[in-house]
Length: 118
Image 1 (cartoon, rainbow, N blue to C red):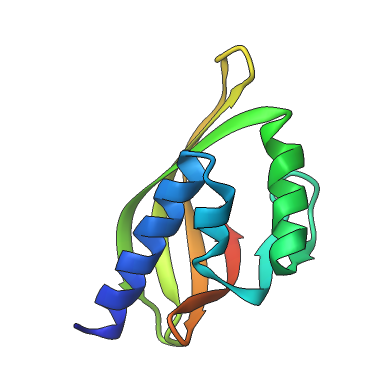
Image 2 (image 1 turned 180 degrees about the vertical axis):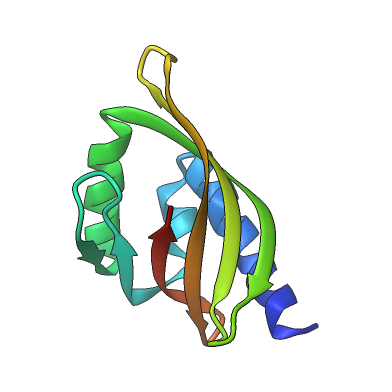
């Protein structure tokens, strides 16, 4: 299995857990000191507790769904995921429906960091 295949399997697991609101399942795909973008307020959060607090706050305000549609390696070895992002308010109204790129650094079989490209 290639590095891209291993990373794709890991990331599909992370997306499925996020969309199912399985916090522990999603966090299990990440290094303990993960660096994660705060897509709502800007900046980044750090570590499992930072991601947990951010997602708990996010899921209390909006209902995001992220569907990976493509996976590729860039020249630096990062995994670039084409993502269909749909964000709804808590009543179900679509607030955002767009394609974005999530760029991951994967080390030792776990997510080390992620950035968002619009």
